[in-house]
Amino acid sequence: MRSNDARRRAMRLRQTGRVAMVLGVVCGAGLATAGAVAAATTVAWGTTTSAPAGTRAQLFGVAAASASDVLAVGGYNPGETPTAVLTRPYAEHWNGSAWTATTVPLGAVYSVHSAQLNGVTEVAPRDGWAVGTVGDLSSLASQTLAYHWDGTAWRRFPTPNPSGPSQGNQLNAVAARATNDVWAAGGDGYPEASLVLHWNGSTWTQVRIPNIGSLDAVTVSPANVWVAGGDAVERFNGTAWTSLPAPPGTGASITGLANTASGLWAVGYRSFTCGEGGICTSSYAALWNGTTWTVVPAGGGSVLAGVVAAGSTVLATGGTGVWQLSTTGASPQVIPTQNAAQLAAIGADPAGSPWAVGWTDVRGTIAPGIINAPGIGQGGIIVTTGAASATVSWIGPANGTGTTDVGGQFATGGLPDGSYTVIASLQGCQPGVASVNVTAGTSTPVNAKVICSP
Image (cartoon, one colour):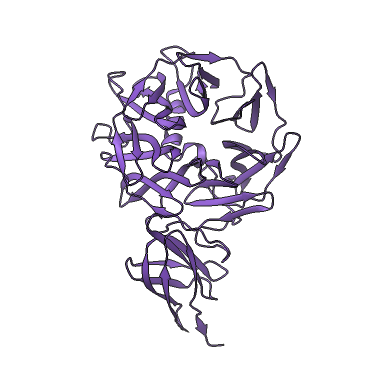
């Protein structure tokens, strides 16, 4: 039986960025921050305003059926005790111009509980599924959750809880091939065993799978279903499960899978000892081409929590950044840096326009954070100063500041369209000043050279 501490630790992990924040020390410098990008990057992400979400709320999943039909899910607390816990499943819907909170019915499950939705998928407009868990805070018990979205309302459907009413059962991810072909993955019992559920159009049933531990990711193709837990990946061809070779690299943990034109992408993190008994993490990405894995240089500090095929590109997110993945490495996207969101999931609509969701923490107030590309009415700037650790300020329709990277660059998205004055300054040096016109969806290069005397 799973210990109380262990079960609550697992729940806390998902309430703070899924498994991305497992390890307390983050080391290394590899992936640049979102503020350090090559001038060739032109897309700029923007922010959208979340619907109201109680006293505390976080988002863990996003899916888009079209530019005017996007679902974001997670958990919230409307003011219930304990206030530091997400007590209700939460979802909101984007209609092309605004986010609206949508009621997710839960009813009376436990006297004091936590609850959240961890993943969401859309088969088509007005046809979505979200999965998660509700847990009893006074015992070891938790139940799986699965809700269907019909374009107007969420409806909960019964789901198996294989470990029984006194132990843990949870769903962490969901993917769909058709209205009657939906797959959900998670874990149950203690030690946690692999849990896979399938929706056939009328009921959810458990699908037997070799046990590789709790599952954090699932993705599908017309012929296959892939799930991942730890460093293990299993493929189901409709008849039998097959184990893929373990992705290269010791200490890898997979938190996201995406079936793409180039193959199966797996992202997550790698943990290793560092310092005097410390544990460090580095971001991890690998591509399976059907025969072999290729580890992609994905940097150091940021743990990758999700990955998606966005048109012809592959995007991953984690921490406060978004990166475009290729077999040669990871390129940071230009995203908003003011009150930056901790990002836990990424999705894209059929046209390839991506969304990323998570939460913001502004003076202790935790609220949903949602960004998308191209920014709606918002663009970005890529400032070249020639000086590391210089302060970059912009004045215009929005004001703000940032700090350049070791290469003397700083980039930010989320700036309302219009004219800006950009000032780069460093103590003891002559500041650089430039004017720029920001255009929606585009990151405009700005040359604001700082001149320092020899």
